Image 1: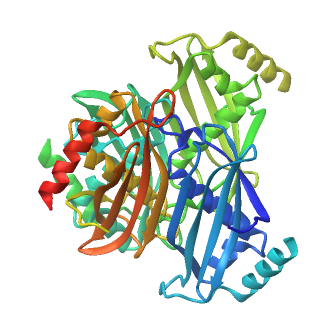
Image 2 (image 1 turned 60 degrees about the vertical axis):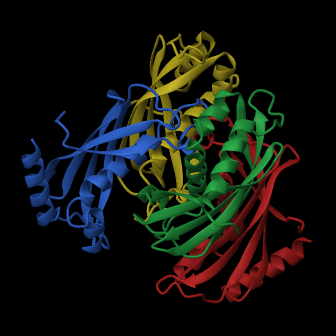
Image 3 (image 1 turned 90 degrees about the horizontal axis):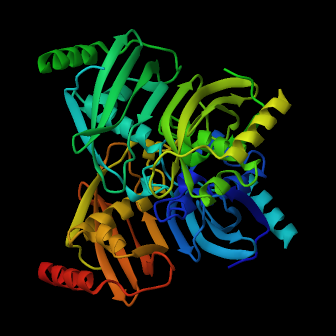
Length: 139
Length: 139
Length: 139
Length: 139
């Protein structure tokens, strides 16, 4: 697991809880996505720009470890970092913190595809470069 | 409120409950949509066919009355009926029943639009005719 | 429709969009709930405090008008106001704005109940008083 | 990966799609849960009975591989099987099939806890026995 130079915040919504009284396990994948989008938004339009250039980023694998339940109205800090960028593929790693305690972590893998053909296509070079210098600059 | 000649069933998912221990209020709009789609599916491809012909049906108004809470694993019968078809506009009425008791009802209003321009366009004639004869035949 | 003295912001999540490319109609009820909770949070613990005192607020009716589609990543301002407080019942009114344009509005009705018996119980007096002076002070 | 003796069906809901035009990645965790609940429902009340006996089953890890996108209205067969039952811990394995093609697979891990204390507690013996004889009988 790498160090994280980026994080974003979500507050657990009542709609995200279930009858166990805690956040539902599927909500974490939504928060991971929120973190990915906020992560990329720092770079020239981010995910919008990727889509505007005719590409989509599909999720091809996802993994979550639930270490302690999240509850309604908890403020969660989602740390995220892009990793393993190679050709059309890239990954993200996540760590979810509440008041300094890690309550979940995980990772996702993605493939960049052409929006129309759904064929794999290279990760945009401009974005790879901006991310590389941001991650290097921050460590 | 009209009589209903069509209904479909949903079972309350655990993910649809919230920390009150009952189904979340937004889940009912998802069930209404399930019912609309099952309602239309009886007519030559239904919603798929509408989309295949280059149209979309937007939701422009929604109303729900929650009469008694729905709980995890409840089998709910969603009665639905298309009403007030006029030009590009149409509506749906719903009644949700559990073991013979009505636990919610409501209605939605919709507009048929061209998928590309999002301009209003007439409800497909073939579908209007099929629905008219189905609703007449059933009453 | 009253004037609004309170508002909160949501950003449309990718998970909230559907295959029409716009925010799904059920997401608006989740945003209304986010606004209710943020509205109440200004008063001594808000919804948490209501639940801590052994009460729940059930949603008994909901209404949404969709005036213009919301899209991925749109920043939406949700205006909300508590209205019609009487005994165990109260309502909320909402207006959703994007860049100064109202793209949706609506209202919900609620009943305060005892968490265990689910019997109606009076809206907490301390909260009613705080809301009354806040709403008066702001207009 | 084991053979599966149990499966259940879901139809992709419109609300489960996103602006990529395919089912959102978080929906798969909801379908896994639907499959777990249907799997257990064959045994004396299943998950209801577990909760009625004062226990909860928390999700402590989840993994999904997305092999091909699921689309609106697709009929998906979710194969599921309980594995690795030991003390308070158990797992589930899943395979999602559309028209005979595997479009996703994955697994989840769970812990049985006391509903009030949230302390780990043994998986109910009666359920372990019924599952063991069902899985043996079927292979």
